[in-house]
Image 1 (tube, rainbow, N blue to C red):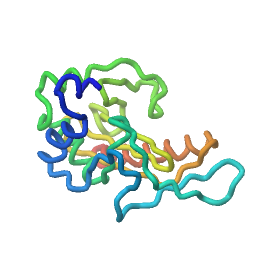
Image 2 (image 1 turned 45 degrees about the vertical axis):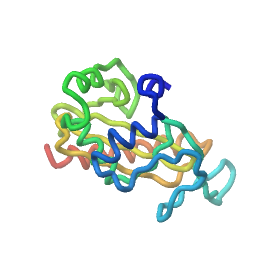
Image 3 (image 1 turned 180 degrees about the vertical axis):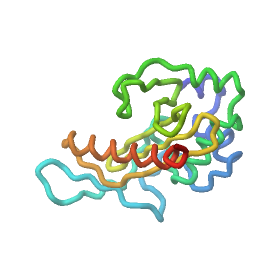
Length: 189
């Protein structure tokens, strides 16, 4: 709503013109009113409580600016590196984005901090920690992290989640975060 009020354009148009097109993100799109994720794509599954089978939840619904973008891990990495290396924002805007408040307990760290749309956490092997952002949709989870200077990043997408099983969901989320952190910082120790 802020984007539309400030620019007079839809958030989708602004995202396409300011981010997707300039960065050449050929596998990133806003879904708008389309109910289906374009193929090829991985199939999203949910395992519901007290069931052994998996339910295909690939059908997408418009999440607006909070969840209405479909992308690949490659495009996610391109975006994160461009965000942190100053390609997308001025130094002043990036500094505002990195101004944080405590986010205790997020991403497995009591030292995590949240800024404007991106969060920070300490990670062994990365002296300056990592900046990260994740997202969930029905049957999918994405996690991505990047170094402060944008020199290294990693993104992962998980396409099977367990609804109503908080313990298994948490284990899965922690394993995904560990994978991302090791990919970004593991080689730097």
